[in-house]
Amino acid sequence: MKKESFIIFILLAILGSFSGFGQQSFNNCSATFLNNKMLVNEYSPAGKCKVSITEKGDLTVNTVELSSTESKAINPIMFQIAIRNKNSGTLTMFSKDKIQKIEIQKILEKCKKGDYIIVLTVNDKFALPHNEILVF
Image (cartoon, rainbow, N blue to C red; front, side):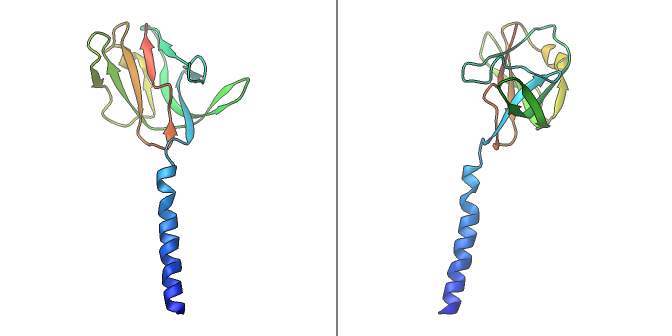
């Protein structure tokens, strides 16, 4: 009887360790930053991101610490970029490689006013609710 109990204990331990995998998605807040400043105007469902076609600087995605007075970038995360064409709505991959930082001018060279820069996380443990950046 001891052997059977031990086997059941091991099986339950193994199953318990796998049961948490599906619950880990999108549990770390992240945001896009341009020159270390969060792009979204407010970190809420109503928040919007936009960038001028002439903007310069480094675009990053970081985990974020939010408070009532500031939004602080904590750790950089890997991401990819796509561009959604204003006229056709077509998404085109800009960065096939995973990146942690990119000069926004390189992306904007491929954009027109009204296009969207789409930021894609490459790990589903990071929530990035404001992943569309309007080019104006």
